[in-house]
Image (cartoon, rainbow, N blue to C red; front, side, top):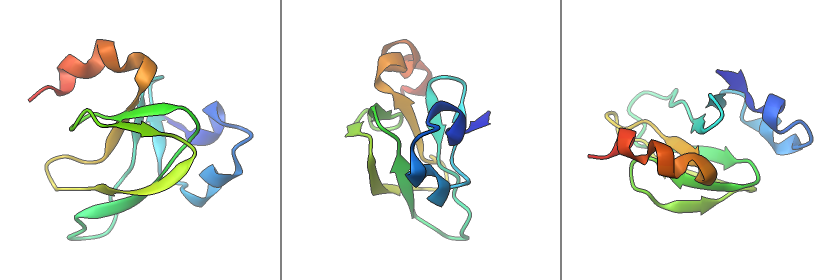
Length: 91
């Protein structure tokens, strides 16, 4: 578990999202900190990402709003690791 600044030291936008973190080399975790929240704003660093719950491909370098149901916290996977990790998140 590590802050985004380790993997993206030149990306100034990460400092606006200090609670997001990488879990290993593949996963980006977006914590939900508001009670009863059903969505959360997230920043995706440069690269290609995949929503682990839907398989939806997302481009990095942008801010977006992700669904945050109580049983599926927002987690993204780097596209390069998705093939090997997709079975872990399969329904």
